[in-house]
Length: 95
Length: 186
Image 1: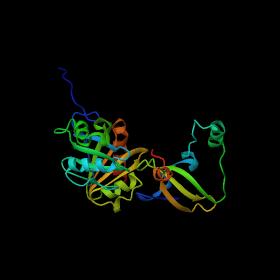
Image 2 (image 1 turned 180 degrees about the vertical axis):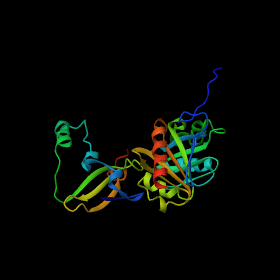
Image 3 (image 1 turned 45 degrees about the vertical axis):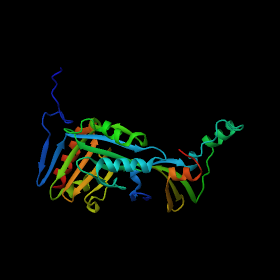
Image 4 (image 1 turned 30 degrees about the vertical axis):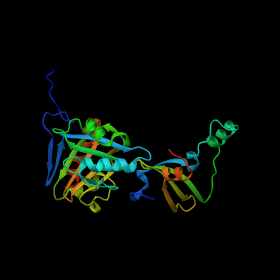
Protein backbone atom coordinates (compact mmCIF):
# COMPACT_ATOMS: atom_id res chain seq x y z
CA UNK A 1 0.00 0.00 0.00
CA UNK A 2 1.30 3.46 -0.93
CA UNK A 3 0.40 6.48 1.20
CA UNK A 4 0.60 9.81 -0.65
CA UNK A 5 2.27 12.00 1.98
CA UNK A 6 1.05 15.61 1.65
CA UNK A 7 4.63 16.96 1.85
CA UNK A 8 6.88 14.13 0.66
CA UNK A 9 4.80 12.45 -2.03
CA UNK A 10 4.06 8.73 -2.37
CA UNK A 11 5.70 6.60 0.34
CA UNK A 12 5.43 2.92 1.12
CA UNK A 13 3.16 2.10 4.04
CA UNK A 14 6.04 0.19 5.70
CA UNK A 15 7.53 3.60 6.58
CA UNK A 16 4.43 4.39 8.64
CA UNK A 17 2.99 3.26 11.94
CA UNK A 18 -0.78 2.95 12.33
CA UNK A 19 -2.33 4.32 15.50
CA UNK A 20 -6.07 4.08 15.03
CA UNK A 21 -9.23 6.11 14.57
CA UNK A 22 -8.58 9.80 13.83
CA UNK A 23 -11.16 10.73 16.49
CA UNK A 24 -8.30 10.18 18.99
CA UNK A 25 -7.20 13.75 18.28
CA UNK A 26 -10.56 15.02 19.59
CA UNK A 27 -9.74 14.62 23.25
CA UNK A 28 -12.74 15.57 25.42
CA UNK A 29 -12.70 18.50 27.84
CA UNK A 30 -11.77 17.02 31.23
CA UNK A 31 -13.56 19.85 33.03
CA UNK A 32 -16.89 19.29 31.32
CA UNK A 33 -19.97 18.14 33.30
CA UNK A 34 -20.12 14.84 31.40
CA UNK A 35 -16.34 14.28 31.32
CA UNK A 36 -16.51 10.69 32.64
CA UNK A 37 -19.00 9.67 29.98
CA UNK A 38 -17.14 11.55 27.25
CA UNK A 39 -13.85 9.87 28.17
CA UNK A 40 -15.54 6.45 28.23
CA UNK A 41 -16.67 7.08 24.66
CA UNK A 42 -13.28 8.49 23.69
CA UNK A 43 -11.28 5.61 25.12
CA UNK A 44 -13.45 2.59 24.34
CA UNK A 45 -16.02 3.23 21.63
CA UNK A 46 -15.01 3.12 17.96
CA UNK A 47 -16.94 2.97 14.75
CA UNK A 48 -15.93 -0.02 12.62
CA UNK A 49 -17.09 1.06 9.19
CA UNK A 50 -16.92 -1.08 6.06
CA UNK A 51 -16.02 1.86 3.87
CA UNK A 52 -14.49 5.28 4.38
CA UNK A 53 -12.48 5.55 7.59
CA UNK A 54 -10.41 8.42 9.02
CA UNK A 55 -7.29 7.12 10.72
CA UNK A 56 -4.04 8.34 12.27
CA UNK A 57 -0.73 7.28 10.77
CA UNK A 58 2.74 8.27 11.97
CA UNK A 59 5.55 8.66 9.45
CA UNK A 60 8.20 7.07 11.63
CA UNK A 61 10.51 6.14 8.75
CA UNK A 62 10.28 9.65 7.35
CA UNK A 63 9.63 13.15 8.60
CA UNK A 64 7.90 11.99 11.82
CA UNK A 65 4.67 13.81 11.06
CA UNK A 66 1.25 12.61 12.15
CA UNK A 67 -1.21 12.21 9.30
CA UNK A 68 -4.96 11.85 9.07
CA UNK A 69 -5.53 9.33 6.28
CA UNK A 70 -8.97 8.78 4.78
CA UNK A 71 -8.97 5.15 3.67
CA UNK A 72 -11.66 2.85 2.38
CA UNK A 73 -11.43 -0.22 4.61
CA UNK A 74 -13.02 -2.41 1.92
CA UNK A 75 -10.86 -1.44 -1.07
CA UNK A 76 -7.85 0.12 0.74
CA UNK A 77 -8.26 3.12 -1.56
CA UNK A 78 -6.80 6.25 0.04
CA UNK A 79 -8.83 9.30 -0.91
CA UNK A 80 -7.27 11.98 1.28
CA UNK A 81 -4.15 12.52 3.40
CA UNK A 82 -3.70 15.58 5.61
CA UNK A 83 -1.23 16.63 8.29
CA UNK A 84 -2.91 15.97 11.64
CA UNK A 85 -1.88 19.41 12.86
CA UNK A 86 -3.72 21.04 9.95
CA UNK A 87 -6.83 19.01 10.81
CA UNK A 88 -6.58 20.07 14.46
CA UNK A 89 -5.98 23.71 13.55
CA UNK A 90 -8.94 23.68 11.16
CA UNK A 91 -11.06 22.72 14.19
CA UNK A 92 -9.82 25.84 15.96
CA UNK A 93 -7.20 24.15 18.09
CA UNK A 94 -3.93 25.98 18.63
CA UNK A 95 -1.66 23.07 19.49
CA UNK B 1 43.36 19.80 32.78
CA UNK B 2 42.32 16.35 31.67
CA UNK B 3 44.32 14.84 28.90
CA UNK B 4 41.67 12.80 27.12
CA UNK B 5 42.11 11.27 23.69
CA UNK B 6 39.27 12.07 21.31
CA UNK B 7 37.83 9.05 19.55
CA UNK B 8 35.39 8.79 16.67
CA UNK B 9 31.94 7.20 16.87
CA UNK B 10 33.45 3.89 15.75
CA UNK B 11 36.03 4.11 18.51
CA UNK B 12 39.10 4.86 16.43
CA UNK B 13 41.53 7.72 16.76
CA UNK B 14 41.24 8.36 13.03
CA UNK B 15 38.03 8.31 10.95
CA UNK B 16 37.37 4.91 9.39
CA UNK B 17 37.58 4.68 5.60
CA UNK B 18 36.25 1.64 3.76
CA UNK B 19 36.52 1.14 0.03
CA UNK B 20 34.76 -1.55 -1.96
CA UNK B 21 35.29 -1.42 -5.73
CA UNK B 22 34.75 2.22 -6.68
CA UNK B 23 32.69 3.29 -3.66
CA UNK B 24 34.21 4.74 -0.51
CA UNK B 25 32.52 5.04 2.89
CA UNK B 26 34.20 7.65 5.08
CA UNK B 27 33.43 8.34 8.71
CA UNK B 28 33.05 12.11 9.21
CA UNK B 29 33.42 13.08 12.87
CA UNK B 30 34.19 16.81 12.61
CA UNK B 31 30.65 18.14 12.27
CA UNK B 32 28.67 20.23 14.74
CA UNK B 33 24.88 19.82 14.71
CA UNK B 34 21.90 21.58 16.25
CA UNK B 35 18.20 21.02 15.63
CA UNK B 36 15.82 23.94 15.22
CA UNK B 37 12.06 23.74 15.66
CA UNK B 38 9.98 26.84 15.03
CA UNK B 39 7.56 27.65 17.81
CA UNK B 40 3.83 27.86 17.17
CA UNK B 41 2.85 31.00 15.16
CA UNK B 42 6.55 32.04 15.02
CA UNK B 43 7.29 30.00 11.88
CA UNK B 44 7.93 32.96 9.54
CA UNK B 45 10.19 34.77 12.02
CA UNK B 46 12.15 31.60 12.71
CA UNK B 47 12.66 31.01 8.98
CA UNK B 48 13.91 34.60 8.53
CA UNK B 49 16.38 34.26 11.40
CA UNK B 50 17.63 30.93 10.04
CA UNK B 51 17.97 32.41 6.55
CA UNK B 52 20.18 35.13 8.01
CA UNK B 53 22.32 32.56 9.81
CA UNK B 54 22.95 30.24 6.86
CA UNK B 55 23.15 33.03 4.26
CA UNK B 56 20.60 31.50 1.87
CA UNK B 57 16.85 30.96 1.95
CA UNK B 58 15.82 28.36 4.55
CA UNK B 59 15.63 25.02 2.72
CA UNK B 60 12.21 23.90 1.57
CA UNK B 61 10.70 20.45 2.12
CA UNK B 62 13.29 17.73 1.56
CA UNK B 63 16.16 20.10 0.79
CA UNK B 64 19.39 21.41 2.31
CA UNK B 65 21.32 24.65 1.71
CA UNK B 66 24.02 26.93 3.09
CA UNK B 67 27.79 27.06 3.45
CA UNK B 68 29.75 26.80 5.75
CA UNK B 69 26.73 26.75 8.08
CA UNK B 70 24.04 24.74 6.35
CA UNK B 71 20.60 23.46 7.28
CA UNK B 72 18.54 20.52 6.11
CA UNK B 73 14.80 20.06 6.37
CA UNK B 74 13.79 17.38 8.89
CA UNK B 75 10.04 17.96 9.20
CA UNK B 76 7.39 20.67 9.07
CA UNK B 77 9.03 23.84 10.47
CA UNK B 78 12.03 21.81 11.65
CA UNK B 79 15.62 21.84 10.46
CA UNK B 80 18.98 20.43 11.41
CA UNK B 81 21.83 22.95 11.24
CA UNK B 82 25.30 21.61 10.50
CA UNK B 83 28.70 23.35 10.48
CA UNK B 84 32.39 22.45 10.78
CA UNK B 85 33.12 21.43 14.39
CA UNK B 86 36.49 23.18 14.36
CA UNK B 87 34.96 26.64 13.91
CA UNK B 88 31.45 26.07 15.35
CA UNK B 89 31.89 23.89 18.43
CA UNK B 90 29.20 25.97 20.18
CA UNK B 91 26.83 25.75 17.21
CA UNK B 92 23.68 25.29 19.34
CA UNK B 93 24.40 28.54 21.19
CA UNK B 94 25.11 30.35 17.93
CA UNK B 95 21.82 29.12 16.47
CA UNK B 96 19.94 30.01 19.65
CA UNK B 97 21.41 33.53 19.54
CA UNK B 98 20.26 33.80 15.93
CA UNK B 99 16.68 32.56 16.34
CA UNK B 100 15.99 33.88 19.86
CA UNK B 101 12.49 33.09 21.10
CA UNK B 102 11.13 32.12 17.69
CA UNK B 103 12.40 28.56 17.82
CA UNK B 104 13.63 25.84 20.15
CA UNK B 105 17.20 24.70 19.62
CA UNK B 106 18.77 21.45 20.76
CA UNK B 107 22.44 20.49 20.69
CA UNK B 108 22.77 17.40 18.47
CA UNK B 109 26.50 17.13 17.79
CA UNK B 110 27.14 13.94 19.70
CA UNK B 111 23.77 12.40 18.91
CA UNK B 112 24.63 11.60 15.30
CA UNK B 113 27.38 10.09 13.27
CA UNK B 114 27.98 10.82 9.64
CA UNK B 115 29.23 8.57 6.85
CA UNK B 116 30.01 10.00 3.43
CA UNK B 117 29.47 7.67 0.49
CA UNK B 118 31.34 8.56 -2.67
CA UNK B 119 31.76 6.75 -5.95
CA UNK B 120 30.23 6.16 -9.34
CA UNK B 121 28.01 3.27 -8.21
CA UNK B 122 26.90 4.71 -4.87
CA UNK B 123 23.26 4.59 -6.00
CA UNK B 124 23.42 0.80 -6.19
CA UNK B 125 24.49 0.76 -2.52
CA UNK B 126 21.73 3.15 -1.45
CA UNK B 127 19.14 1.04 -3.22
CA UNK B 128 20.01 -1.85 -0.92
CA UNK B 129 20.19 0.35 2.16
CA UNK B 130 16.99 2.37 2.22
CA UNK B 131 13.51 2.65 0.70
CA UNK B 132 14.23 6.11 -0.74
CA UNK B 133 14.16 6.56 -4.48
CA UNK B 134 17.80 7.66 -4.44
CA UNK B 135 18.06 7.74 -8.22
CA UNK B 136 15.47 10.53 -8.24
CA UNK B 137 17.35 12.53 -5.61
CA UNK B 138 19.04 15.65 -6.94
CA UNK B 139 21.86 17.78 -5.60
CA UNK B 140 20.60 19.49 -2.43
CA UNK B 141 17.96 16.87 -1.57
CA UNK B 142 17.71 15.62 2.01
CA UNK B 143 15.41 12.88 3.29
CA UNK B 144 14.83 10.87 6.40
CA UNK B 145 14.72 7.13 5.92
CA UNK B 146 15.01 3.93 7.90
CA UNK B 147 18.35 2.20 7.29
CA UNK B 148 18.81 -1.12 9.12
CA UNK B 149 15.85 -0.10 11.37
CA UNK B 150 17.68 3.12 12.29
CA UNK B 151 16.17 6.55 11.63
CA UNK B 152 18.76 8.18 9.37
CA UNK B 153 19.08 11.23 7.18
CA UNK B 154 20.32 10.90 3.61
CA UNK B 155 21.75 14.00 1.91
CA UNK B 156 22.53 14.11 -1.81
CA UNK B 157 25.50 16.28 -2.81
CA UNK B 158 25.60 14.84 -6.33
CA UNK B 159 24.52 11.53 -7.94
CA UNK B 160 27.83 9.99 -6.80
CA UNK B 161 28.23 11.69 -3.41
CA UNK B 162 25.85 11.18 -0.49
CA UNK B 163 26.02 11.73 3.26
CA UNK B 164 24.24 9.48 5.73
CA UNK B 165 23.52 10.63 9.27
CA UNK B 166 22.57 7.95 11.76
CA UNK B 167 22.28 7.68 15.53
CA UNK B 168 25.80 7.79 17.02
CA UNK B 169 25.00 5.12 19.60
CA UNK B 170 24.34 2.74 16.70
CA UNK B 171 27.35 3.84 14.63
CA UNK B 172 28.77 0.31 14.58
CA UNK B 173 25.51 -1.21 13.30
CA UNK B 174 25.12 1.49 10.68
CA UNK B 175 28.72 1.07 9.52
CA UNK B 176 28.22 -2.70 9.38
CA UNK B 177 25.10 -2.43 7.23
CA UNK B 178 26.68 0.15 4.88
CA UNK B 179 29.81 -1.93 4.28
CA UNK B 180 27.72 -5.10 3.91
CA UNK B 181 25.56 -3.37 1.30
CA UNK B 182 28.70 -2.15 -0.48
CA UNK B 183 30.09 -5.67 -0.65
CA UNK B 184 26.74 -7.04 -1.84
CA UNK B 185 26.01 -4.39 -4.44
CA UNK B 186 29.45 -3.87 -5.97
